[in-house]
Image (cartoon, rainbow, N blue to C red; front, side, top):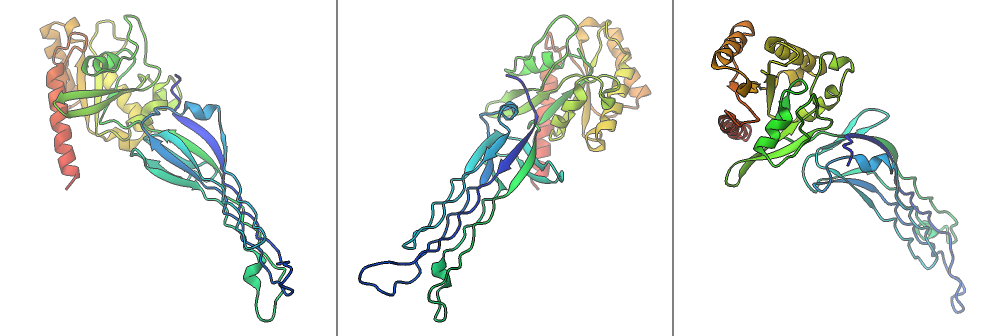
Length: 341
């Protein structure tokens, strides 16, 4: 299934039914009065978050959603039937914008959360309501009101606790596959992730966190190069970023350049994202000697003045991975406690 994280749809709520003009005509009631009933309300349109979807691909094929109109009123003071509401399922984590004003209408972050996006038109009233002592045969009625019509932009932001960052082939997919049941495409040739992958990392009985892997960034991503900048928005909800650095002798950039290039792209995309807690994870340690690993760590601390946590791992052999997971789990537990105060 294709991963689609943006879609534009049009929603049209139903119009309210018109009120009715009617008079009683019965054999033994010579002076029958007005008995026109009210119309029915138009159907409204709701969006509802569900965990059964993880992409907006369905909205590439169906872009128009129209709720039924309310039925007009009838004689004998019979009201028209209201139009049925429509509920559209969207993935958890969907942001809804008015596509014309760019106003944020809602953010569906919990399973079952529901949002009204187009309200149905209210019903018109029949002539029975206009009867009075001076107007015994009213012919007035009110028409039903039109339903709301909107163009919506849907934007999916995956919900994850930890986000993986790095240049292509830094080993992000290998790491998420090593610590969770996620199975992204991994190859022994130059390759980069094409869409975000989510993995649930279980670190203790009944305790886990969600890790997100997005396509690798390349230099100039903020100007449109590559795929990664498009998916950076999926890391905006995360509590912690892991920046993977490729220690392989075949890496295209020096380790210092890898850190600086990616940080520059983060800043160009969002200052808020650039200032999220970010840990450096030196990956592919199995391809380096002990002396090289010590040299790399020293360079990062002295040349970058790095003070945040720094880890050395090999996602392929799981060297150092358990320690990294333990530290992440401890950090998230402390963060959740602090945020609940």
